[in-house]
Length: 334
Ligand code: NDP
Image 1 (spheres, rainbow, N blue to C red):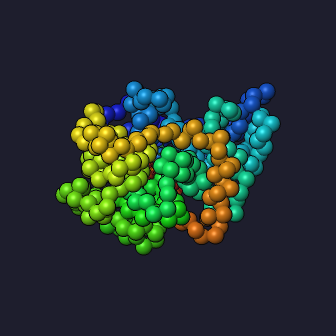
Image 2: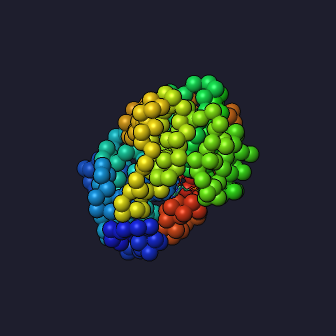
Image 3: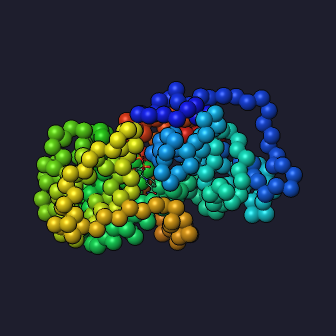
């Protein structure tokens, strides 16, 4: 249960675990709703934006109600012709063991491919996967041989962007917040280089060291000081895909960005994007990504905690970088 709107960093105590007396696992008569048993819940940075009253484009959480987010579930009962008991789905659900979902108010996709881990539908085969695919291939317009920089590179989205960049034949460097993550990027995920931004006193110097020739494409996940340093290192006609600004979500006032004139001098294209615009391309995305997974061309690192009661700590941990890879909460065994 989400307790009350917050300022600053989220805490576990901003959420409360409760047990309700009776669970109705049947949809109301004549409704088009479905009941799902939640199996996996996804921790995503945007959920912090729903914990404050003015969250821009999103509808904030309701204090006293369960928080919502992406998840994978099994249909238990259905009044909707397109879903039947036993179907597996991914989409927006509640942080609870069972959820009554309204179709089509809730974004819901029926899962057709089960030869891959079901948890992947919270990550590589779900919202973060579509984000990386659309953000990199559509927004960044990558070309072979270009120099690509990814921040929050070991996370749900970043680890995919880096691997997509390698598939295109780019040179790719990632930043992350621990040495363990840096090793993961270089040794498991195929990045050409990586650095720990928390141990770099001068981010501009770190980027100059990694990109003596400059950056063609920056996949922006964090904002703030990193964006300022990147702007000084962009090449002429570079592109910045603005996916998110996770370093800013807990600040009352966003940090100022000082080097904006570089956008003019370097003729940089800066473009934000929203994953929701790309769901109509989901089946095309699956046609691309499923063979990559099956053939081992793309790897996916998950950070899995067991039990709904571990959910609040896992969600809060995103903002200190506690997660190594895509953060998932297991609610029930498959
Ligand atoms: P991650 O799995 O990468 O988790 C968040 C990570 O951000 C942490 O692990 C941490 O890694 C890093 N981080 C946290 N605080 C800071 C900070 N102050 N400075 C720098 N890094 C920080 O999350 P996702 O991959 O799911 O999301 C990445 C970005 O993509 C976010 O900005 C998110 O909002 C955005 N997004 C945007 C979408 C869109 O439609 N535009 C859709 C989905 C995601 P580390 O240890 O490296 O610091």
